[in-house]
Length: 272
Ligand SMILES: O=C(O)CCC(=O)C(=O)O
Image (cartoon, rainbow, N blue to C red; front, side, top):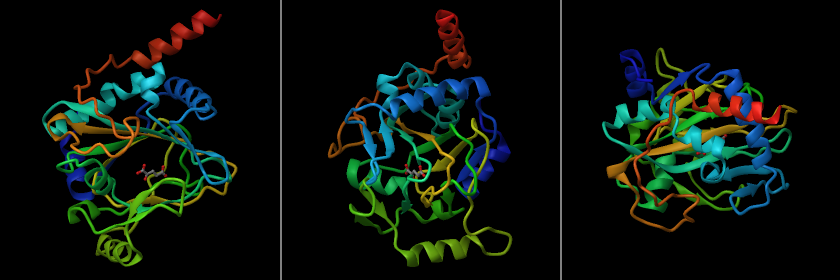
C-alpha cells in the first residue's frame, strides 16, 4: 500500500492520515481474540490501570505470532518506508486496552517528545500507526489529535509520573489551548477525534499533539499502536526496558498481504 498525492498532502498539512476499513472483519476477529488473551496474561509487559484493569501490553509482536505478522504487515510498513525513503524497524509496539468503565486518561503529549528525551532518538523520523481493534466511538475514550500541531517541533513538556500508571512527557493547558486555537483558525477544526469501525487505521506524525479521555462506557476500545522508526534514525539512549523501546534495529521484511488471513484459516482448519 502506498500513500497517494492527496494522502501525502493531508499528512504534511494536518499531521495525520485516516484509512477506514484497512483490515477486514476476519483479520480483526483474529487480532481481537488474540488481544483479549494477551491482556489477561501475567507478564511484565502487561501494565494495569490503578484500578487493576489492563492498560497496555508492550511488545506483543515478540511473543504473539499474530501480532508478529501485524508488525510486519505491508499495509502498515510500506507507507512508512515511502514517507521516510528508507527501511524501518519496530521502535515500540503497544496494545492499549482502554477497558470499559476503567480505561484511564492519556494526557496531552507528543510521542516524539518521549522518544527524544527518554530514548535519544535523533529526529522525528518515526511514527505511530494506530490499528482499531474495537469500534472507536466519540464516547469510549477516542484518541483526540490537534491538527497541524506537528508543525511546532518538540514542545516543552513536564514528566508526569503520577496521573496514570504510565510516565509521560505531558504538555500544559496553555500550550494545548494555543495549539487548538491555531488549528481552529478559518476553515480548521481545533481538536479532531478520528472514529471508525474496527479495522480502521490512523497514521500520525511523531510530533502531532494527542490525548484521550477515560472510558466510562460499557464499550471497550482496544487500539494497537505500532511505532516504526527509520533505520538510520535509531535510538541512542537505553534508559527504558528493551521491551518498551526496542534495541533491535533490523529492517522489517514485510510479510505477504494475506498473511493474517492465511494464519486465521490455517488455525481454524486445525481446530476443526
Ligand atoms: O490509546 C490511547 O488512547 C492513547 C495512546 C497514546 O497516546 C500513546 O500511546 O502515545
